[in-house]
Image 1: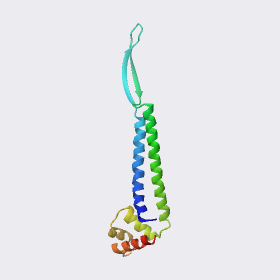
Image 2 (image 1 turned 90 degrees about the vertical axis):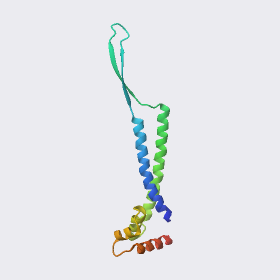
Image 3 (image 1 turned 180 degrees about the vertical axis):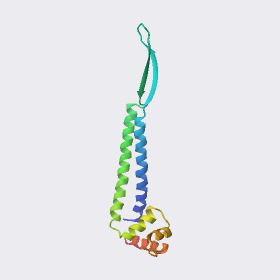
Image 4 (image 1 turned 60 degrees about the vertical axis):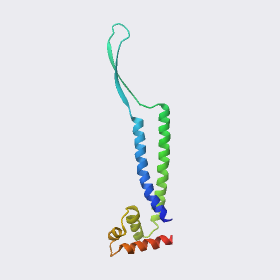
Length: 140
């Protein structure tokens, strides 16, 4: 496990969110229904005026096929990002708790070293936890 995987974790989390939004947009597009009113008359005598309401989607069978294919690709992208997320979370369980907190504050929440030290407490300094993090990352 290297430091790059921590950055990949952040990207994976964002990608999951973005992909879920894209999937919602696709599904909403598929459910879009257009309605209109039409009037006409009986073709035989007596010619009586009638009103009809028509409803339907704005895309064809081919469009629907393309939307389903695109949704499938989005689901695969989301699944791959979730694999990265799980891999990092499993790795984090093997890391000492203090280091988990440092990684959480510095890498995932993008705090400065001083802000992370303040969150950690116990007279921790920004330089101290930075060095602790660097030594830990050199070991792995």
